Image (cartoon, rainbow, N blue to C red; front, top):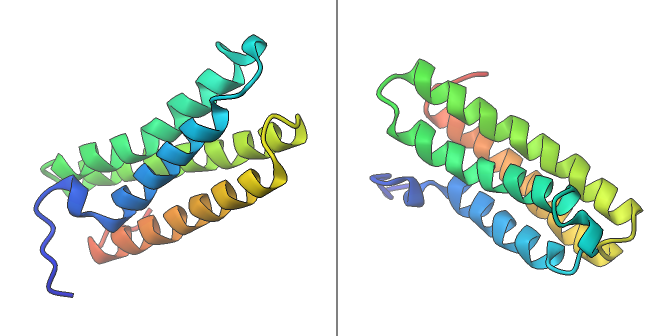
Amino acid sequence: MGNKVTTFQDIVAWKKAHELTLFVYKITDCFPKCEEFGLKSQIRRAVVSIPSNIAEGFKRKSKIDSSHFYNMAEASLEEVKYQLLLSRDLKYILNEEYEIASNLASETGRILFGWLKSQRIFL
């Protein structure tokens, strides 16, 4: 446990959220043209918000400020979970892609919660 966190990129929750973001971008690439400014855009904005808010929270000077951004990351993660489910049910993504993304999202949530506990930030 000797890994010192000096930048947001050292945070395991950020790394997992970044991995989820890359995967969501990949699986949404083939969404129908009619979703370009709809679900495709919405899920991409929401998923980018997760690692972005972790990064911003990390740089905040107080635990209260940090907790606000970590909470926004958690909320965006829940939004993405629903949008993945919707994407699957609309048959925009395969069941296998949904399972991988859903597992990544769940793992991101668990790791983010662990990060909050390690920072003594309880939301």
